[in-house]
Image 1: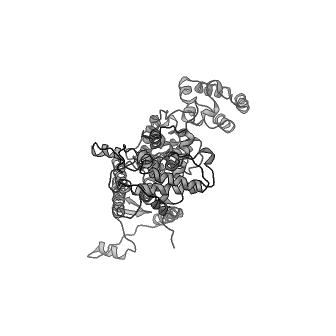
Image 2 (image 1 turned 90 degrees about the vertical axis):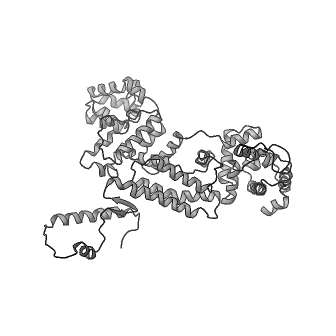
Image 3 (image 1 turned 60 degrees about the vertical axis):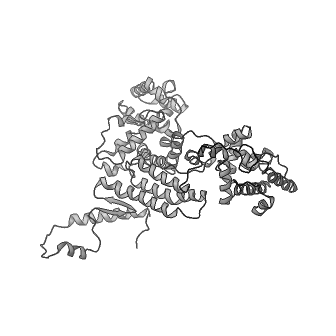
Length: 514
């Protein structure tokens, strides 16, 4: 009996057996006998109960190669081919637009993240770009995207549908090792593979410390050097000092080089706090709490003088006398690595977010009104939770994110001059006109409002209610809101089905859809 693939016991059992095997091999004397045979290799192959791999072995889905340089080709190149083959086979699936996005999240993303976690080596960004392009082609069925990736990749709370950004996930996974360095967790770090002959404690002084200034990286470093380079580039982009910050540890190389007694650092760390921000800088040195003032009087005079001199220096104050950022808190204040990748990814999304036009702002401009922050939250919440049905929710997402093409957009796409409504009303074909303002669509919306009044629902005749789910404040929690939402989205389906046809959607078609 064995363990299932991915079982956490598997590597532990492997190590136990490997140690026993290594001892047995060392205790066995070498006893070579000449084998007289015409086909020695063939005989050995037949008599060996397991295959002998000469170039690579596969362990937990990862190809471990004889040569380090072959890791990329044997793992990442094959992963790209596998993903493209999956997308090719799935391209004709009778699946909705939002369904294709969910396929990417459930079937493609886990494969990629597992490979990133298992082998966080340096890979070219063009590799990730190529995969993302293949994914976008699959989502949009090889057609031109109607909504930018920058909008789609936003979280649902901010008006998106959280399409994964593989480049940022890769950066997050590579950088997460820095958390283990800062926490000085030596049991699960990549440096156990790379630097078994050196002092592992040197990695404790790399993050928010000056240990990296004189760090001599090995030329064949696969993981650690790449992690440090990513960490440093992210800090530089955030305009943070990667060597000195409010979260620099009291037990850092900065402090150790001052020659302060270990017992002084220990009692200060236990009673006051583990980093410079808690100890206090400048006039706040050991003066922020009664306990700190008590410790200040107890510690050695020379140690106190050295520590105060360093924490009062101009460079220290300029870099460390401020509130820690969320990025620094991730590495310094979180004691568990649970959801570590998600926390790093969230911060990287903020850092690398691209400016894009907010679809709701365009709605506000066309409706000639202003949406408050509370209104935006209500619109985004409605888009995310308007229904448990994926089909209904997809319709609302498409409407809110301005998915549908209009005569105005087609003029830009096809470089034509006719921007009039396709229904033949003669008006300019803006999105708000096609959904609401067209005189051939108005009868349907008025019929919907008549039905609402018969059901005892008295709502303002406002396009923001049926199109964006922005109900009046006194009605947002009413029990009949679900009924009204179903009627509105059924009307959206009816209008969208006849989007570019020169006729009016009928009330009977709406009732049938409802």
